[in-house]
Length: 190
Image (cartoon, rainbow, N blue to C red; front, side, top):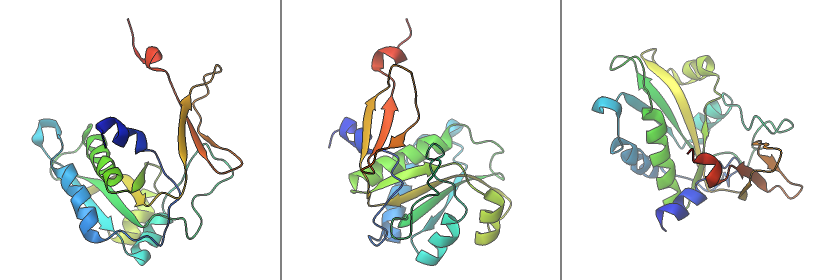
């Protein structure tokens, strides 16, 4: 696959084949991509929790909110939930702010997931206090993002932003997830 093909396949998938497992070594391979990615000042303040165990996954799942624009959908049903998670944290003993590092690291891991035939979703809507308690995460780590991973069970279609400029993603009656994107010309200033 070309870089463009990988980027186009790297959508926010929210429904997965839950029974298609992802082993811990695959998660470590994705994390290795993060390790080799850029870090502001080369400080490397990010730390991670990896999960591919159903019990731990259930604890993580219950602390996440899914798809804000889909008002009548509470998230993936049992059988469609992620097979694995990577919790992205900042180590406050190394640095007290984390800049763009989480975005760079997560994008690297998600592109690697696509290369492996997987998909994911970056989740920022997290009940951090509850997740910290459920997983006994020490206070030195600031919970930043959660990556949900699995074999995608849904189709995601990129389409041109409509004339009304509505950027909200939506699902049609066949369950296909539609994501409006601004045109290239609209992004270029001057």
